[in-house]
Length: 225
Image 1 (spheres, rainbow, N blue to C red):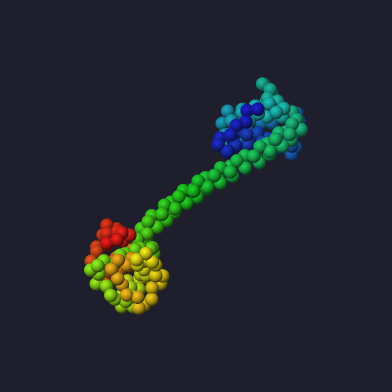
Image 2: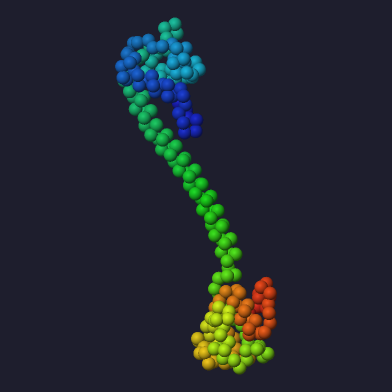
């Protein structure tokens, strides 16, 4: 059999062969009847004579018609026409499935591209916002701190910076949620939670030094001052 496909679409000569076979099954063309010549069929289907030749060759190979020189195209078997249409319908189902699968694969590829794009946007946004997210920081009270001897209530870190002091490490001991009356001493390590900006402000209050926004990492709050 000489059937073939262009991508997932049926070739024109196949659809013409199917149409002629269908007419035979319906009784429009009877066994032994001579049907139109190639030129007439080419005009009827608005295709080239070569396309008609391929369609008739296909029908002749399936035993549906005889193409006889000097006589023309003669219907040979309606049973063979019916069998050919059954085979065609099965292949058409497979072809439709293949075409739909191809469409879905294209859609999935498009979705994957959109997902990758949104994922990259999310990562970029997350990195840009990282400096604004709440995080834990440590700052050590130096010997010349302006807060020495002042209580937590007097320092009022929460109201002035937005940071929360979670605990104070002093002489190897940890004071969780230090009371308002707790006074600050040199060497105290304050564990706080807050944004990058609030950490800078706590550092400034504790050390008396004013830092530009980019200097907070250079000073490294995680080391003793």
